[in-house]
Length: 308
Image (cartoon, rainbow, N blue to C red):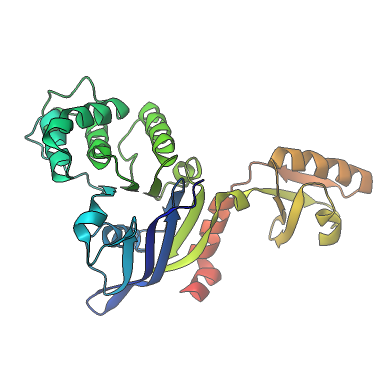
């Protein structure tokens, strides 16, 4: 990953009347990062994205895109940005190619380069067969593809995608995932979704918002865990001594073992140690969904109340 910072937001605050929707939200994103922005409905995800894209004013804080302040150099900042809102901004009575040419021109693509830019975006998004069709005649899935195409037609450095796979079938979702991964190699991307498997398949980093506050922000690599349960309690020290285990946490259903490699390898090492020590293995879950566990822990119950 290139360490060049492409998006920097600090201290974002937003009110809706007397209700404060965002509390000092910070987001710093470098080239090559794909940030998964998670949160329950009403957590502040869409508000944050709209502020980052200049579609909504913040009541506090600042945003820089590619080193340009969004407040004082909006034209330069937005030229580096592609945005897909939750409801794609489509003109239903336009043909797909005409719409994408218009988007390219709005984003500053020269007239003599617009056709090539549209052809590239159309190819990436699987729209080659529908360029001459009216947007209103497309299925919801294809309209979503057009929304993604308008966000990338000008080759932005920062891409903000709000529910990018909404309405897509499984094959289309797979294609969009591959497209996002490809785009993410040389760009900074934010993907906001409430579908945890979707963001888990894409993100190199996770951020969780709850009631307008950031309650988690860490690399995805720290999410590899193994859940185990035994008849006889082995103790944290014995578990920590197992090869590949870097951290041991007690849970209501046994132990969570943070591992520095593949969970399957740690599961095998745990099984060997457990049999040798006679712990009595009841459960080994190398497919434990730690992201879901963390999300629920931080957005519901006592932990969520404390965070808020």
